[in-house]
Structure formats: C-alpha cells, structure tokens
Image 1 (tube, helix red, strand yellow):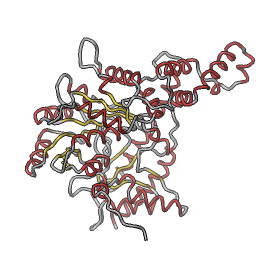
Image 2 (cartoon, rainbow, N blue to C red):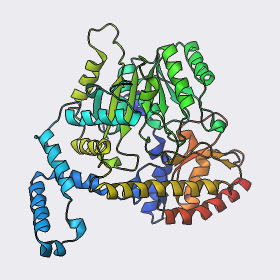
Image 3 (cartoon, rainbow, N blue to C red):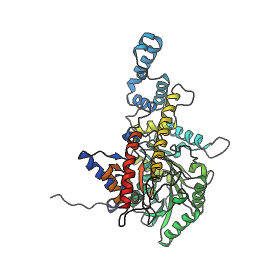
Image 4 (cartoon, rainbow, N blue to C red):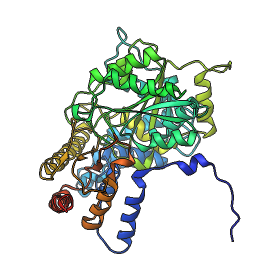
Length: 479
C-alpha cells in the first residue's frame, strides 16, 4: 500500500474544464473505437491546420546550424545551373531571403538554440517585439509611449506570463483579482493555486459582451464588503471563451476604472490577429501616457500561427508598481522569477521572433506568407459563420458579439427541467461525438447555460456534424 502524503490544498482545488470530464470521456470513447470531433480546445494544428511555411523553414534552419551552409550551396548551384534547377522541386529550394533571415538571426544569437539564453530572452528578439508593438499601435518618435525592450520577457506561452504576475500580486487570501465571467480557466485555476480570491465581473452578453463602469464598480464594492484587497483586473480581448471583440469604449471604461482605483490591468491579447474585420485596440495604446500598471500578453499559439505546442510568447510590462516594504523593484522581482526557470524554451523564442518580424511586403517570400495567412483566417471565419447560422435552427440558442478569436459561446435558453449545460454537453458527446465544454467550466451569469465550441475542425467535418447537432438539440430540448 503506497504511503499517503499531504498535497497542497490549493493545487487540489484547481479546475481546468477545457481538459475536464467531457474531453476525458471523449478520450474513452475514442479508445473504444468511436469517432469524436474535438471542438473543446484552441489547438489548430491538431485539427489539420498546416504550419506556415516561413515559420517552419526558419525554425528548421535554426535547429540545425550546419544545414544553413548546405542550403546556401544548393541555392547558388540552382541559380548557376539551369539543368540542376530543373531537377529540383520548387519546394525543395529554400529561398535566399529565408537563408539571409536565418543568417542574421545567427549573428545575433551566436550560442544557438541549445544554450541557455538571457532569462528575459535574447535582446534582439525583445527589440523586435518592441518594434512590433510600436508599429501595431502607431507609435512614433513624435507621439505615444514606445515599448521598452528591457520591460519585455519572453515566455513559454502566454500562460507562463500570467503565472508570473499573479504569483507576484497575490500574497494571501485577502488579495483579489477581478476576472471577466465567463473567463479562461487559466485565471481561476492560477488564482486558486496562489491562494488568492477571484472577484467576478460580468460583461453584458445581450449587448455583445460589452463593459460599462457600473458593473465594474459593483464587483469592486462587493469585494470591499468582504474585506478583499483587489489588486488587478483581467481583460481578455478578443474574448475566450466568448470570442467577442471588446470595443474601444469598453476598453476606456476599464482604463478609467483601473486609474481611479489604483488597480493594475492584465491584458490577455493573444487573439489580437483573430479579428475577421473587426476593429481592435491594444491596452498599451488605450493607457497612453497614463501611469497605470499594465501587463500585456501575446502568444504564437493563436492568431493564424497555431503553434500551440512550441509554447512561445511574451509579457510586456508598463508602469510597474512599487514593491511595499522592500528596496527591490518590481522588475527586479519579475526578473528573479524568470531567472529561477532559467529561460523560456528557445524554439518558442524563434517563432515569437518570426511572429513579430514577418516577411515584409515586397520581399520575395511575402506573397506565399500572405496567401497562407489569408487562407487560414478566411477559412476560420467561414467556419465560424457556418456554426453561428446553425444556431438559428436550434430552439432557444442565441450567440452574441462580433466574431473573434477561435470560439462561439452560445447561450442555451431552453433545456429540460433538472438539467444544465454539463448534462447537455455530455449528451451531445455521447450522441454525436461532438466535444465541447460546458459554460459552467468558464463561469457564467447565475441562471444561464452555455457551451464553448472552437470552430477549428476542417470545413467538411463541420458541414457533416451540424445537421446531427441540430437534430440532437431539438430532440433533446423538447424531450
């Protein structure tokens, strides 16, 4: 009989519905030979999205340094010999632009990917991130607040950056973090693990998940009644699980609220390129020259890149707060955290560099890069529209907000008495093989039921599954 050991109760209390009971049941069904359709998680390449050619060419050459010289020789040989070039397939010849791009990376990164890097990540990558942020936000030498490479940390996915910040801001159970409901379970799980208190605020679903000052003030007042010291407010834009794109007016409400109440803003902006034509503005741009503490996050997992497994991303800090009762600065403590884990993985660092420093328009490889990007985003939007249109054929199903990110979060207004969204999603899985996550796994307004579905499976798979879902739903809700 194994010896029993005590386990941190905060770890025991953590929950992560995205990989919870419903996906676990789906795994059992798969082992039994059932076909399932995984719509429970934002994992594009697991569902057939092809990696971008440019990203993988750069990564392959960085992983194998000796290959760069060999590819240069092949390229020169093909250029000088028509006969040799004819024997080669076009995709077998890596363009000179890519070879020069990688050679430039090697000049800035002489130790290569197998060695430890600076704990923040290589300076040249952080400088590229700063340029990306400034270009994105329209910052110039004449106006705006430029990003500082020394305030940027490369992370193994955005999740690591979230953990860094919450571990620093939460000192005990009296410290609270405001999070939008519904929210991505990373936040609730990390707050629990850190021993803090989750403070819910509720964007207005019927008004396309917008925010107004009254809902923020109400959440803060409730926290104060319970003697909770609210430290920060989390905003996920575009939303996860809602997929909704936050309008600038709502963003400004958050900024004024944070300023007047001395709160930091944690801006989860990993879906900033999944906009499908919607307007979007970063929180770095919204705070401008204000002195509000801002922690913003981005990742290579999302957008049109879908490089979830490579775990790359960055954390940018603006206006770091002072540390009470200590001479050490906030950024010094953050660097200590980064140093303890040595550095983020270097494959993620390479791909983060490519994300913020893609081929420019007019370069020899731009046309292919742009075509692959457009194809991915166009198909994602088309699949999102197909699913949303199917909701109109399901009794009592409504979906709100401008399409963004990778998800829908429809409200299930009609369910059999005594059942909730968990029972619905489990029955949907058993009957049709469609894997979703019930709304309660993300939190939701009391008295409502939802589910989250990722619009990532191939289009033909979605076309095939929707009639089954519609039939299941209308039978299920009518008994």
